[in-house]
View 1 (cartoon, rainbow, N blue to C red):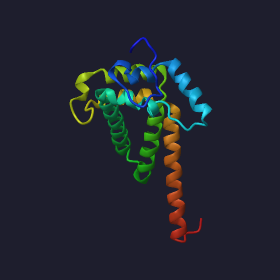
View 2: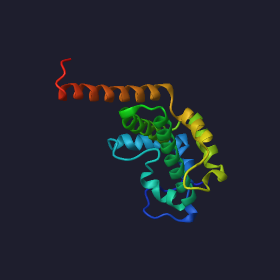
View 3: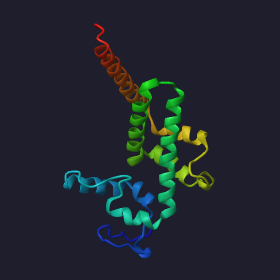
View 4: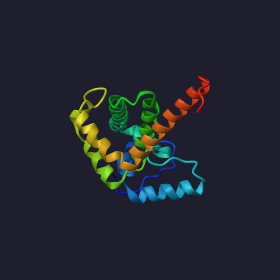
Length: 178
């Protein structure tokens, strides 16, 4: 990352003022400034992986953009496979949707622990030779870091509520007295 502060408001970017978007994502001072800027406009700008005006910087590093995309897709795939294996029946779809939402939240504003793990995975070249990251062990480990107990409780509660709604709907359709 260059020593001079780049101008994030300009519409075109060049190699001279390009910064590594991952440096921005993990730079607490930049993140604080982004939050203040977001507050000033009532939340109408993005933060975290919603790169906003920094999107040009991200586009200059297509390899990083590709790796971030591959990582996110691979994590979404892994959580879907995991929940499918748990045989949740009709609640699987909503459980997967909720888990993916939680993953995205955690990836947008990662904790220092999550940052460290993401950087290690992004820096491991051999993981990015295929369409998906094939190492389920690494993906499961990262899921364990990203999704906390409260996330799993939310996923379980949403799935349980969905199943309850389905049962109560069937009771009314079948005209069974409750």
